[in-house]
Length: 180
Image 1 (spheres, rainbow, N blue to C red):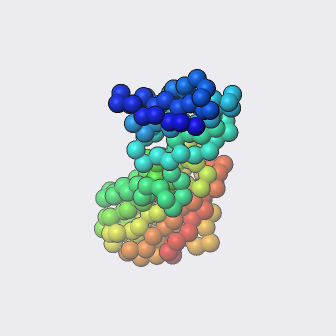
Image 2: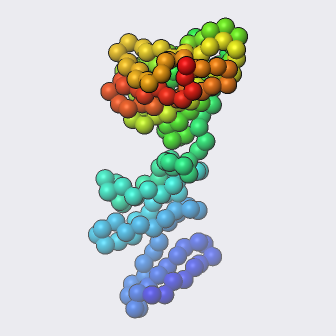
Image 3: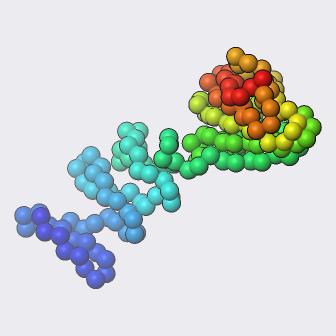
């Protein structure tokens, strides 16, 4: 195979003197992917911070996706200072590997309500940490149809304790952490 790079950014390749193969790449960062015909096809450059992911449902067998697991973006952070807050999907977005932190900082007792999947399309495995920063005891409450399973109570033990919520699916959450 011979590959020539031209001044106009055109890449021309020939195999054993055959007709030239012209690159379908058009933009900085494009990738050439075998499309199964056999031929090369252009996969456009992905979104900043996204990673190349194998996906057999895609025409080219790969796609750009937000990183998952420990290599992804840091958890979302949403500080609250009121006495009542209802969780939202933006508190643990997919772009943060469905993890988030919602701190509660109030001198009076305060509560965080967990809404049902019908209101917020939680992904199974979503994890939300709720640290109690203020002196007022932070507790969690179940929205309509939501089940909160815990070995302790639904309240933080003391100031600077954290409640950890983990979505198990079907409106069922596991409540853990430093609860009373």
